[in-house]
Amino acid sequence: MKKYLILSVFIFAVFSASSSEAFDFGDISKHVGNAIGVVDTTAKAARPISDEEEYYVGRAVAAKILGTYQLSNNKELTRYVNLIGKTVAMNSEKPFTYGGYHFAILDTDELNALACPGGTIFITRGMVNLAANEDELAAILAHEVGHINKRDGISAIKSARWTEAVTIIGTQAAKTYSGGELSQLVGIFEGSIDDIFKTLVVNGYSKSQEYAADESALRYLAKSGYDPNALNDFLKRLATKGKSSGGGITQTHPATSDRIDKISGNIPSGQVDRKAVEIRTARFNRIPK
Amino acid sequence: MRIKFLITLSLLIILAPVLLLAETATVITKENAIREYCKFFAPVKAQVRYNDVLEILSTEGDWYKVQFGQSTGCIHKTAVDKRTASASGSFSSRKGSGVSENEAALAGKGFNPQVESSYKQKHPEMKYHLVDNIEKLLVSDREIEQFVTQGGLRQP
Image (tube, rainbow over the protein chains, first blue to last red):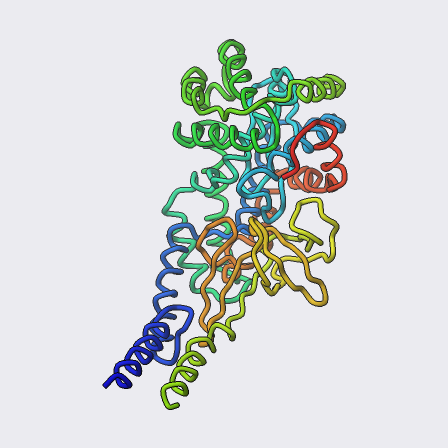
């Protein structure tokens, strides 16, 4: 009797293990495989875009923005902004994107910063000049890296476009499209770029997306070794200057006073190395702007 | 004696699929590097490109220890799409960033270079050449490392 009991326990153990995803056999594997297929389809329908696609969307959005704004030729400042931005991005949840992070300066007095999907980030000359030091500049860039990490740009695309795109992408196994399908995809692509451009430049993200990007920025700053209070300091200055400048960030972002209220109390505690802040401020001041 | 035999047999049946499991990771960035140890500025042991398949050996924080050809080293989790192949040949996929879609299955589909090319032809006014220039600006690991150190910042 005891022998049969032990045998039964082992047979049960074997079959229990076999029914899990890692131990699938025969028919069981078919069911598990089907289940995985269903999960995959659901995931694609919910957010059917790969990092590679996001990169091509981001390039088009950047190309469109550069049709509106001039690109700054200040190479030293551009390199400096890239060093700060890449440092912050390395300390984000997503240090790597398909095409990497790139930072560029728009030659305008307007106060704004824009994150294109995939990792290209623009900051205006006006915004750079409003920052008092490197830590504040890092805070602006960290906020934009937050938008990229959360894929906020992609979320601006109307859901109807995804439904249409999934139909084409889902039925086409090949990586090259022909005739009608290509034309349809280009149309969806075009519409997606317009959706994102309008959100970035005219309407802005939702308040919750902006607050979340501020929260992300605080984390990235603290992790990088920048002073997270710099975001608060910058927003206070923006609250004053932004009102008089009009347009740009004041048009597309929630009231700066609300952003200040939201982040106060969430600023990570920890000792700030004041001497290091001074060193960074000195190098910030050495860069021609 | 018979029970011993059954125990051994059962354990073999349970463990066999585990031993057969192969965890692989597909590179989902245009290019990336396998590093000597699991740090951003560690020396590069091998360059990898989009869609290269790496064998996962172990996990260390936000990094995978991987094998690629003759090279063994580390790659950041967000640079790859991890796939677990079961003994039956079915796959489950998980991206390092925690996104559940299968990046590798979507590779090259949808908005790809062909779509961009057609869009460019339709919209010659788009400043793609400036975007290319922005992407061409390379900042080396060494430069970022020096920038971090000199500014009293923390290495990730």
